[in-house]
Image (cartoon, rainbow, N blue to C red):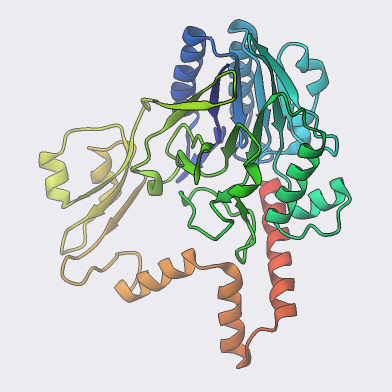
Length: 392
């Protein structure tokens, strides 16, 4: 059986105030063309179809267009789940009506966890669609009071699946989570992806998926396997942050043999515009650089301030997203007072919000933050993040 594994489309994405819809259409049309030519048995989309709970109209229209081409014109089943950026209820709407045409959208986690059954000449392949849900939702859905973390939630979900699984069928798990080899904390692969939890509670052990012949994951934007070659992130099809500058974007082609052994091949996508860094003086940019439509983040290496820097940069790079100036000797950023302040700002941006609050509390109160208050702040912070996500 041949499957295409993709994830993290993030339709409706804004980067530095620029909508990425045209760029998304370009890369995803290449994906559709590959489906039309190679005719896989099914397509897996492992979450984050949209970038926000209430996507803009253009994003909804683009997803509708893409699904129509894939399911109706290419006659290829699409199996998709919601991610942490999606609205589960919106993706769930009308799914029963669409399943007869080959469109399977799992928006909200359900206790049943019944697989979508695909067939090839070797027999059935059971695909378990597990949409993103936070531990509290999983605890309620599965009626399991022991669930407190994302790892607890995944352990309980997999146990429920394994209890009813057909031992003679090849099995695929589709999920949206932060999976690491042993559930240990690791840095995210992109600054554009919001955390699933704070305080180190978002990570899930890859060991939970050992009973599946292939695990198709979404959430992390860089394509990679996690400990086992059968546990894979497809990555996003487009760069959504300058932290993804060196990512090679595309999708995965997965082939299962009669015994369930999975072979995986990476297919790369050519973007409409690249996203990259440029470091040079304004004089070098104006006289030596060729005009480019790429999305660039520019660091000007001029010792003196540059008047109207964005206007000058955009004469060469019309789609420049960010311009800053640094003096070679002191590494001063124009937007702040000095390098130390810049580094402190960067450290604050990258730090765990709970740790930041604990430091603030200690500085103001002169005493460490108690565990009970730390937990209360973490829960309150996550509630605020969820509400902001729904309101975007």
